[in-house]
Length: 398
Image (cartoon, rainbow, N blue to C red; front, side, top):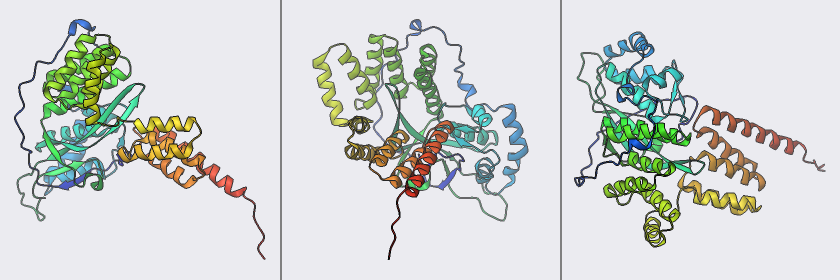
């Protein structure tokens, strides 16, 4: 996301939003839960905590937000108070998914956390809200052998009744997004129920716990997500990965097949099931599944990135640069690919391109710590570039 910067501004777009019609889904099988395989988690997975206001939030609402209700359009006034005055100093931070109170306390959050915090304040003020899933290309992140797809959601503040003021309220729904308008241009979106937003939050927590190796906590969050919204296939896929990591292969396969019963083209579930089959030596089934996956996704996430790193190891910097460019054509905002592309450009003597890649890596990094690292590397590269130019010999010209 281009909006992974130290200061966040909410982008408001007035839009008439129509729900997408589709074929009614078939009744899926029950989610395969197996509590007996995991120890109880000490983490609270209560859905009621996700939108709950803390005392500090209530004080802020009383001190700063109550006046918004007297404005011609309190929705715009709310967003101004939260994001445009600079009082909160919000930062983008995808290192952990925070609930409303945690995002407010940290003054930071990812897009989902900021949507939840904004909705929490809006509901507290009596403003009707709804949610949309924005159908943009997923951005992938990778930790070890765990690859995660990151989607995007935004918030709709519904139209409020006209008020007897000098200026009229903005007609129609007001879309609050944390992506710049150019990134939203042409993007379709579909409605989300609040139960799905809650399931997304819980699924994120499950993935974060899984990445930390906390399998019991991860299962607890995935279980809560599945129970919150049994139709949210991503949570059942996460459940399958948890079973796989814990060595419960039969349960993992059942979970992944439950996802595919809902959506036979779910690439994540197909990829995980293929991994399971190959590990178990089920070559005929794996071959058939692999052919199907190749038709849906000829090149998996980070395919060209991995080839580019191999080319770098062989000293083929020009070849690596081409491969990194191919990966960036699919994931232009992926900070790690940008970082390696910067290294390839530097080895090729193109300091300007290297600096540009590092700037984009910094601006699109997922948390303040990563931003600081990339900023330091950028400063170091620019210092080396300046020093190399100063050391170039000069020629006398008659």
